[in-house]
Image (cartoon, rainbow, N blue to C red; front, side, top):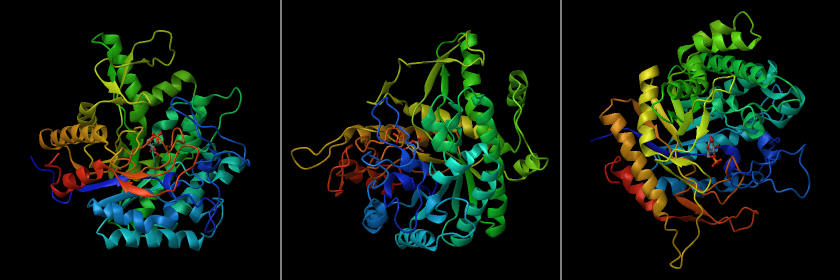
Amino acid sequence: MALPKGFLWGGAVAAHQLEGAWNVGGKGPSVADVMTVGAPGVERGITDGIIEGENYPNHEAIDFYHRYKEDIALLAGMGFKCFRTSIAWTRIFPNGDELEPNEEGLKFYDDLFDEMHKYGMEPVVTLSHFEIPLHLANEYGGWRNRKMIEFFVRFAKVCFERYKDKVKYWMTFNEINNQRNTESPFLTFTNSGLLYKEGEDRYQVMYQAAHYEFVASAIAVIEGHKINPDFQIGCMIAFCPTYPASAAPQDQIAALKEMDRTYVFADVQCRGHYPSYILKEWERFGTDIRMEPEDLKIIQEGTVDYIAFSYYMTFTTEYDESNVRHLGREKKNPFVKANDWGWQIDPIGLRYALNLLQERYELPLMIVENGIGLHEHEEADGMIHDDARIEYFANHITEMKKAVELDGVTLIGYCPWGPIDLVSAGTGEMEKRYGFIYVDKNNKGEGTLARKPKKSYYWYKRVIETNGENL
Ligand code: BG6
């Protein structure tokens, strides 16, 4: 069994979760900079501005901004072929609505991408990864406002122009479908910089914001291709397949409808139009999405080149008659285990996910996030023995290979999440560790920030060396 030659083995991070230096080099505050620390099962707080004495983990993060050379060298030590990161919007446009970019911010990413190329590492870049300028959230209401299209497109074009010879793989919006859960301020704030007002129709506001993002993403794809026709510009979906809890027909429908809530975000960006099921749903719920006459044409012309997705878990659902939106009720899957944060571990679900996406879209796929958060510490021999992580990845890579070799899925690359410990997006914890490299820092922000390879570091190095043969 062999993965294709040139397969992009690497890892993935996001600027706000590792760079730190939140107000250095002309950077403005982003939505991530007003988020405090949560805990397993407890969402992060969002404060009104930056409050003295609060613990904002992203402010320092792991100080990658000042240590990126050391960190890139460590990642290169595993033989990374690519490295996914994001460009912090607020380093380039500190408030988001300026006309001219911040040169110091642009220079930082020039240096970072040069450093990657020094080791033959392909940059894979997300434009918007939970880092919307705070000013745009506060003054414009985030993506509820159509003006965001203009701001985002300006940002995207500046990045495309500047890095056109350094970056080939791009993504527009990270996990754009997270916001479908309108009950979570964390998800709507990080996805779209919006917080719902008392009594408003969240469903309508959510799809309005998503519509503007679809238009912005499509314009970025169109403009990006003009700047460099070789660009590969993808969407990025959080893909958690939902299984029916039983063989009962109504559970099949519940699972199907639940999946539609994810698919709609990929359907629009990959197929270039709104699918019929969502148009019918809007009709039923009296949802009225404001669109300009050219919007649908832009969406049609700006379809993506590939699908990037994160895969962490699957869900299970059963029919719930009381739910007017005909969504299922989430259930625990008795066939799979979960980590300390309740994320269900399902390697076969990755093969299933790859098949679903391949069959539906027939576009190249890239796994740009996969991994397990664990509590870890140094043991008596000074080593971090993360055997649970090795087992997790070995099982997932085995299933990924089956999808390619047995099912014919077109897969470009595999980037596990957080190859170096970083701030958790969901809880703000440092102690929800994903890395092959340990970083000495705890949830309170204490520690030396020293880096140290874990046991899995040497394991993943061998996996890359053998193109996935030696697990
Ligand atoms: C994805 C995000 O949701 O999952 C990342 O794109 C995030 O930003 C990752 O860090 C893991 O989630 P968490 O909450 O464990 O950090």
